Image 1: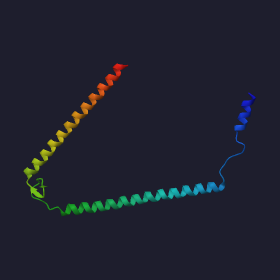
Image 2: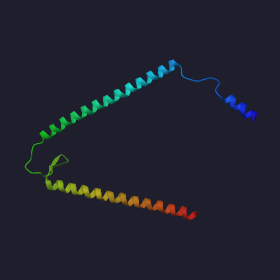
Image 3: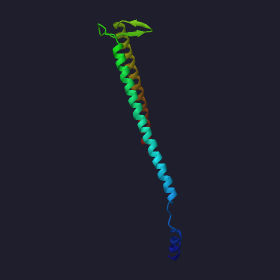
Image 4: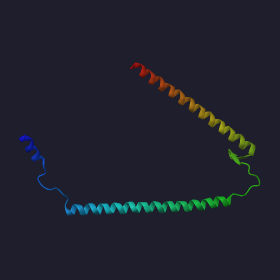
Length: 129
């Protein structure tokens, strides 16, 4: 029991540990500088966002004004640099939709096959136990 008390006394701090006034001053200056930097970045970000929004609004109104009104609301499509008619545009759109549906079905089939492999693996591991 005596040894335990001796070890405990040896492990106690021999003097008070604290930061010097100079170190505290350096830390406070570094924190103040860090706050100023982050504030500067925040205001720079706000200014950049405002500038982007202004440019976007100007471009939106310029594009809107430059589009000539047409007499019909049919879709206009350019294929290989040539203007296509509304029927051709409709056919192209239908073909794209069909290709996308085929792609989605293929992905779904592959996912189902992979899930089945995982299920078989899990059943095999379960049966081994």
